[in-house]
Length: 123
Image: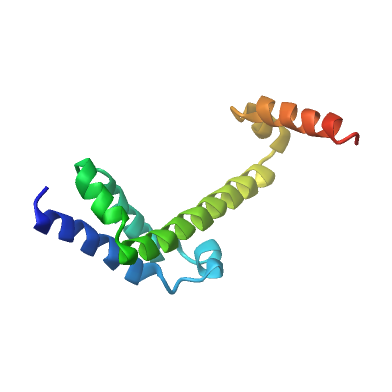
């Protein structure tokens, strides 16, 4: 991989980091999603970049990249929580929440998990 391509990837990643590093969890959870959505779109484009193993190792071992990656991963996790909360609120606000919950593809798995935890915990 050309050095300028590698530098370009690192620059794009650290630029995204600079744009989101000061966002609080509160802003991510309750603010408008347009404060971080464009950065997720940029990350999706980066994820589609063809990078050979050697170049990936070089990027992943870079300390500046590692710091940026930690913050971006945190943003991604908090945004996932935001999406779960929004989904839960829409289910609760629906005319018959139980119908929606029971249609959820993983609902049987959750029921089974709860049963196993209940029995395993002697509850």
